[in-house]
Image (cartoon, rainbow, N blue to C red; front, side, top):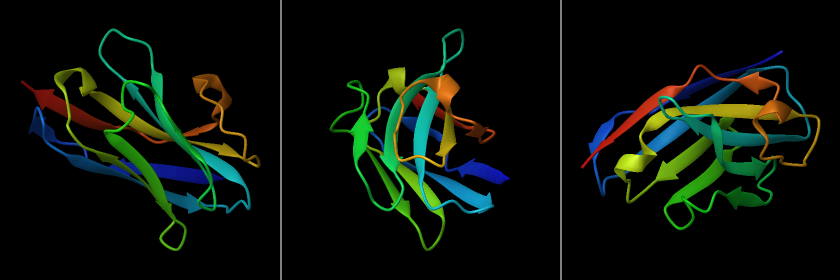
Length: 125
């Protein structure tokens, strides 16, 4: 089985930056898709960004384009989400998730089988 562990969440002021990390452990797969999702209180979980394993293509939600960057380090088995120009509306619990055995990166929450426990990001105005 694959396990995911997020870290890097914090409280910052608007305009600040954070880098979230997601560490992968357990069984390895040659093909997979990693995604970052977030869930604000009282709202549904939404996708933020995805990346295909092996440095493949990335896609971003319109609300974070130009501000967030998803990347991976295969040697460290980590996926990152660099978040710049943070806004109060970015406040949420952020989760990383894995879609295993495929390089098709869905943006649908239910298509990801493995999830981390989440890391809280709070942006104050």
